[in-house]
Amino acid sequence: MAVDVGSNRSVVLASTDVALRQRLRVSLTGMRWQVREAAGGAEAMAQMEELRPEALVMDHWLPDLEVGEFAGQVAAMYPGVDVLWMGGDAVAGSIRSPRRHEILHALREAADAGGSDGASAAAAPVAIPQGGRTWQATSRESVFGEKNQIAKGHEAVGLPPQTHAPGSAQDLGHPLVLTTVHAAQALPVLKPALPVAIAEMIGSSAPMMELARLIRLVAPRSATVLIEGETGSGKEVVAKALHRLSSRAQKPFAVLNCAAIPEALLEAELFGHTRGAFTGAVTSRTGRIEAAHGGTLFLDEIGEMPMALQAKMLRFLECGELQKVGENEVVRVDVRVIAATHQHLEKRTAEGTFRLDLYHRLAVFPVEVPALRERVEDIPALAEFFLAEMGKESPRKRLSPAALESLKGYSWPGNVRELAHVLERGTILAGDSAEIGVGEIRFRRVTA
Image (cartoon, rainbow, N blue to C red; front, side):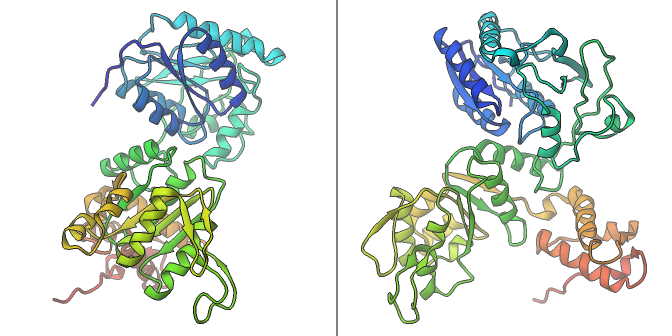
């Protein structure tokens, strides 16, 4: 649903250039603007949801989202926002703020404050409308002097550096490339980006697009996330995406499966222990929480955590302090907690097997990973991915049309994990053949 935004003298600045954002903030706050900063598209979207700004000023490259797609999402969700590029050009179709001249003045001041790195007329960005969407082309030296911006964009999406001539056939053939042009050059025709903006997640179905949207919104925040979904649906993949798109991405990502560790050892594994705290504790050990300091702790199968330990976990979530087993000293730790479960925790709380207060602490922002049977249209892309991975160790195989239809018609109780196993089994059964036929697609037998 589109959300209109009123005129309220507030702006979100989306750029990886901290110095540039600071210069713009100083200039705009001097004109009584309320300013929010964002280092990426996901963070900017979260700031917009909270602030509902009058304007958005965005850079020509963002580390986590493709800028053309991001601009289209903003236009759809916030039709009342004036969207401007850092060079001062407006995104086609965006509404004009009655105070746009103040933002343009701030952009000029920021450019001037940057010294010789300021904008030049020859390097001015050019808006390229294509298929109802607006794309931005800029020179290799941006309007604020940041060089190799396009090359950085290639690295961010896992593409090789751009070595061919701007506007060449290679440019036109890749859907994620923003071609380098100057205002005097002919404008190339660019293809729209692929719909999947989160690298770890494969599939473009509606449930996956909604999941990607939620991940982008919550990733920049420190809110606790509860990932719900059936076994094998990819909950850990979602947790890794949340960590990668957060400001903690360069810090540790610690994983603890609460169902894989005996109850007697789980507390020590989570909180750590001192030497001699219990039989077999011959040395002190740092727990998973402390090991994740500054980063993210992923608690898989949180529903399996014993009731006694749930109280201690609740205490940590409330105050950020932990106490090692056998230790009196309290340690303060900065960790973002992401939990996952295949169980219905709300039902478990009614049964008295899971603490209600801990559930509310964990489910600040719940997200649900769709089952594979709910996104059958993603099976071809998933199969292609798994076969390509298997092809790294042995000759790559392809699916016959009948085999693919067989995959689409199955109910997938084991979800994506089961799909990977079925394809691996089919690869083995196919032997020396380059094709996996319908006879090699064998599903598990489920007995009553």
